[in-house]
Amino acid sequence: MLQIFSDTGIVEGELQPLVNWHNNTQEVLDAAREGPGEQGRPHYLGPGLEKKRDDLYYTNGFNALLSDDIALDRSLKDIRHPKCKTKLYSAKLPTVSIVIPFFEEHWTTLLRTVVSVVKHSPRHLLKEIILVDDGSTIKDFLKDPLDNWLKEHVPIAKVIRLPSRVGLIVARQEGAKAATADTIVVLDSHCEVMVNWLPPLLDPIVVNYRTAVCPLIDVINKDTFAYSPQDNGARGAFDWRLYYKRLPLTDKDNNLLPEPFENPIMNGGLFAISRKFFWELGGYDPGLAIWGGEQYDLSFKIWQCGGRMLDAPCSRVGHVFRGAPKGRPSVKGDFLSKNYKRVAVVWMDEYAEALYRRNPHLREVDAGDVSRELEIRERLQCKSFKWYLENVAPDLVKRYPPVEPPDYANGTIKSVASPTLCLDNGSKEYGPIIIHTLKMAVCDNNKVEQKWIFSFTNTKLIQDQYPHFPKSRDTL
Ligand code: UDP
Ligand code: MN
Image (spheres, rainbow, N blue to C red):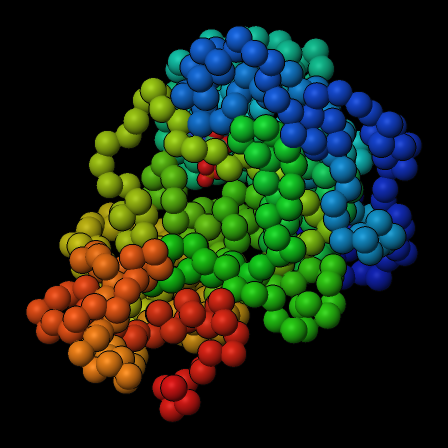
């Protein structure tokens, strides 16, 4: 099986000596750094810059002016699980092509992504950094100045330019086509990676090349650029509107932390995968337009077609979770519904019905030609969606059942002491209880404010906050 990792000649699954991959010199130098945003601390702009700040905020959805104050190679406090510092990884790891699509990205956030990757990756593993310009038109610095800067400072980086905007999915795919290393690592264009982020992503791929590994994603605050954890990790999931959800780690996962744990759905755009496996799967469905649904496409395909997906808590990557950028070219049409429909018809079998019941308009949406995807599914003898749910995320259907059980109860809630008084929500809005308007009021059968539904979903919401709340209808 030598051809899998042909760059390095690593043999899949071969027992290897384990070594410490930390760059100790770099870590000592970083610990001594001071200045704006150093150690991942929040930074604040001086007075008089409000207009400039607001203009740049408007087009980027984050405080881009403040980003310009912070060194491209700033230091970050090591916030990993303490055991990560001493964890050892295979002595030989595969080479990496980093793929970063960007659309109208800000100069310093884009370059900081590139610089942090170079700074924190072992030089001999980093074969190339492929930036994919997804048809940006409004920022001239993303053209020649970017090429020139990279030529001078990061010669292993290059830019592929797409003639017009195709969206992040096809842009990633174009980057992956140009990749030549044994593995592909995809990042967003406003990220920063943390010390020793790469070996934890690559090590599980050496054991089994049909593996995708995701880092733990941290938050780079969009106003101050402070670097902080989102949480200690969770398993990705979805509800039946295909909203991304998170499930807790299993007890076994928790006990084994910071070992990698199985993840049903990747969190979005940050992952590592062997190049061979990515292309065996046909990459992303190229019929997915612009943005959205691609994490389901790839996650379902990886699991159903004989692969596995892990989260590696010792690999951490910060991401600027931004607000919606404004004033940039927008795309017409409901591309998201079409993307979801494609994912549903290709991978979800009879469970697609659960989506259509909640989003009836999806029934009418034209998925377009999915023959390429169905052919891949057939050729790889991929398993059913039922198999995926039962084996990869058995707790998903308990929390998000495809068919919700009937309401446990509905009607009015009367006071036992004063039966003429009823619980009154104080609002006609259908939705969560509004605590500050909640009151006891004279019972009135016609008032919607006094109609209560005790549904499956409500119970789950309450259970999240009150773990001792009865878990089934019988004990209510
Ligand atoms: N992107 C792109 N083309 C698009 C939209 C986004 O290349 O049409 C890039 C974007 O620059 C970023 C990545 O794809 O590197 C993810 O997009 P974004 O950050 O807007 O998504 P979010 O992280 O907010 O979900
Ligand atoms: Mn992003």
